[in-house]
Structure formats: C-alpha cells, structure tokens
Image (cartoon, rainbow, N blue to C red; front, side, top):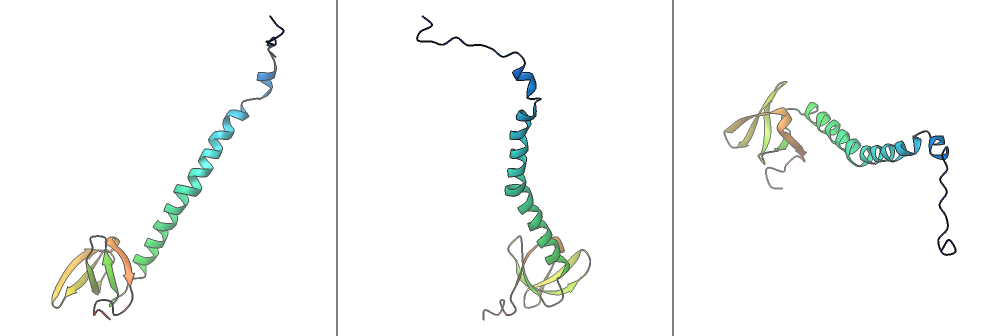
Length: 109
C-alpha cells in the first residue's frame, strides 16, 4: 500500500531549530500595515487640526464641526466669538472649528 502513499517521517529537531521567529513575523507585518494605513494618517490629521486651531485670528471665516459658518470677532485661548449673521454672535470652543474658509465666503462672492 505504500506504493501510492509515501510514508511520513517526522523530524524531531527541525521544529525546535526555528526558534519561534517565524510565528512573530506575521504579527510584525500586521502592525506595520496598521501603522501605515490607520495610525500614521490619523496622527497627521490631528497635527494639521492643531496647527489650524493655533493659527486662527480675528477676522477669519471658519466652519465649525456643527456646521456653523461665521467670522471670528473675538478669540482667546479656549473660546472664540463667532458672528454667524448681522449682530448674531455665538461663542464656540476653538477645538470645534473644522476648517478655515477663503476670505469673502460669507458674502457669497
């Protein structure tokens, strides 16, 4: 019967020679993929938002994460007064500002 099926011979010390590094390689590759596809882009986005918030100044036109469009009238370390219409001013936290708009956006130019 061994004509069709070859006999399996086990090598006793071959499994011990690997040292376990082969099992660690897929985990390292998985971490590298997660770093470049998930962690690194998120860190870049957080850094860009932090720079945006620090560079805000009076007169900038911005959009908040809540969707409010307005012009900054007063600004301090934590909050800014945002004019969303004539004589309508709301106070928003600086970190809730999503993006900076080009000058003249509120006028509809």
